Amino acid sequence: MHDHENSEHLASFADVLAGELPGTWASVHHPAEDKDDLADLADRVWDLDLVAEALAEYPLRHAAVLTRQDGAQLAVLDRLGRNGFLVAAIAPSDLPAEAFRGIREPDGIAVSDDPFHSAELVASDLLARFDAALAQVRCTAAGIRPSQPDRIVLTWQPDGSLAAAPVSEEAADVLIANGFVREESGSYRLSGDDTTAQARAVRAVGPQLDARGIAVALQHPSGRIAPTAVPPTPGPAPAAPRASTTRIR
Image 1 (spheres, rainbow, N blue to C red):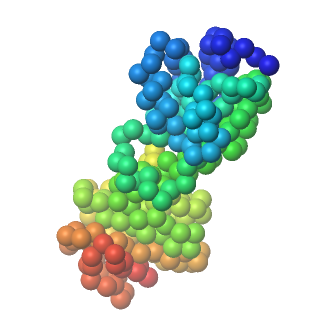
Image 2: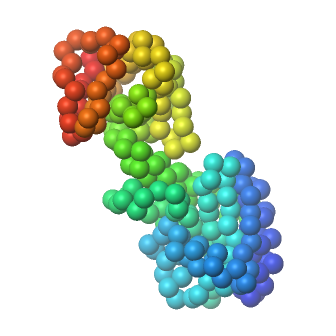
């Protein structure tokens, strides 16, 4: 069993772990002297299971924070009373609390002292759930209505662009081929700078997705009117309140 009082052990483990995870990660160690940082970290650990229980039982004496290039963060903590470490997601601090409501926490996991094997576990389990939860929260915060496997909702944004929540790989290929750009949140956005081009893309997306068994709908938030340059499509419904959608055929 490793010495949990030895912060250098945790720091070294976190440094190697950061280098083995997919993407670009930086590791920062917070010793006991960083009381404010540790208190903030404990509050932001995105977990209601194993890690939350550990934090409730033992005070956080030191920790490491791994930060990915896109801002996503993981915490590496001692697993007091047992060998190995705990790795947990850190909730983003720049989003409103309402955005997290109804979204399941990407609970952390216990890993061994081996950073190479631990990196495989984190990448295949925790990171996959973390990225999915992050995408949901960011889309909720942006007012983008979630899509379903067989139905995509395109939501008008205040800047005139259209956005779609994370979608299947098959649907993503269609969106990208028609000018949508994938954002860090995992959503897809079609610029409204050229409304004629935007309308052309929307008209093309509908049939292409429909041929794949995927329906498409346009969501008009309250007070938002679609650009007048968008030509009508067969059988559209007029702009409606946020709760309503317009089907693209």
